[in-house]
Length: 356
Image (cartoon, rainbow, N blue to C red; front, side, top):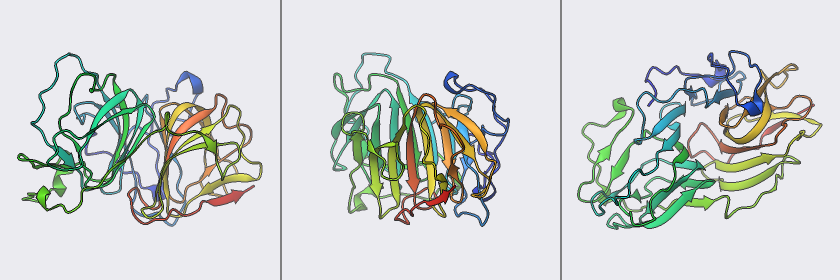
């Protein structure tokens, strides 16, 4: 976990902190010193009355967490207004041939939503349907794998047989909408709070036996199961639909633009009044323009590439300048919330389009 003294970035009057300027070869150029923040971006719960700007993180230059989570290498790059965190995680591979003993640790659940996208490698997931089940459904989540996990979705436990362990380092982009806590089930069930100790009920003795309905996750292999299709809103872009929940106001897509893509000539950009959008660049390069308001006639152009995170808060412009957006083309993960950065409050509003 990053230091608890992380500076809050209020999106109503967003301040971008000084960052190290290093860039990948695909998008190497000198950047203004105040573009990339090296502390977690923290959102405000409600949009302010004024206009905000995009916030950008270069993962290559972003420091690792002082206290890593999940027994892995982690970088906590974004936090919700009260709880919640977006964590870039690298789980190491298995270094031995010994199989762990099964039947000891039960599965667990969270009382909040979470989602995850596999950037590289693989993970072996156990997905039980009952708290009394010791060997849940086996699912291998590979590169391009998407997961949306609702509250009270059982996962984990013990299932490790030949070949059914993760085979490679697992690079995961994980967002937890809650406090990071989990509740284990079974004879040794308890509640674990890794973060936000000031929010822990005392005492807190959850009774997993009282849960009336355990939910199921949504899992999709975007490389194997989905194909690119035309973006119905922006000509020349391609999409893969990962998840779309109008009731809870949540949408996840993969977006792709070809080399030398140029936006529609009559479109300057778009913004949301309440919705928030997260983007993570998986491949390529592109120009991103920082607008101070929809009427800004001289936005700042920033070059981003692979492993850059871009946060678009409510009342901030995702827009375009002159010329092409990308030299190499680009692919990014795009997640949209109807309001703040948690499920609920849907449906997602239509973007407000800014004409040239």
